[in-house]
Length: 359
Image (cartoon, rainbow, N blue to C red; front, top):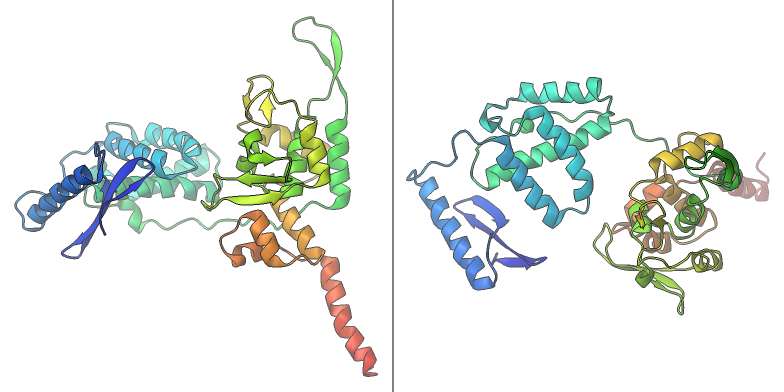
């Protein structure tokens, strides 16, 4: 495969004597320079294969793997911001100057134990850390500075799958009632009591989620330029699947959006920072607790959208397009029939029995 360009960066990718190589062409500003860099890599690999030069560097520090991963994640991962926190934990544990070649599978097992016992993380979260760590070592191998990845012999932890959950109509009513409640608090500056609605900012965000099926990140990063009020749709360009999609705006959502002050290019702004919200977890879970709604995540609002649409007979391909899934099987996983729909289904079978006088 010839060199190619992606997001203003040039990359090489080729096979040489059975070995696949893929990486960035640092400093290349055009195809010619990228090809020159690729030829240099091919020449170096050929020398390594023939034993002319060693295949790896000695005493590679963890900091080198960190720099490789940081560059890779910035260019290729939408979750880069989340990864920076995980990387900090990883680097604090192993140390920037620790020698990579000395890391053994036993050290990785100790790291897993640390995450579980010291940081109290769930198996699913620990697996995400291991995925990052594994990629760091693989990047070191791809860039020919190390030979081995100790995580190839490490088994993933069994994840406790989140219980299938969607918001009932009664729970939705309780949720919005709790959001609208007024609370008496002491003003930190005047020391006088005042009435506030601390969770009111969640209302338009949750309504947007329930009327579009958008992901949390898509909602929090929504810009006014993404909304076409004249034709009535939201156009998302930067999506998880990488494909743009248009979502029609319901009359309810249109009213909500029209009542938001346009003080920024972003729709949902934190008044304390005048920047988009980065996380809703703390406030969202507090209001859930007050509304007595358990075992529920913000992401389950997408479950709710899919379930409600399927319950009303909307075709799965339409639900797939609204949610932005690349595969229909993913949509099917979200669309869990509610118990009443199952009962309706078997009653249809019962009607055939009655029609044929089967007792």
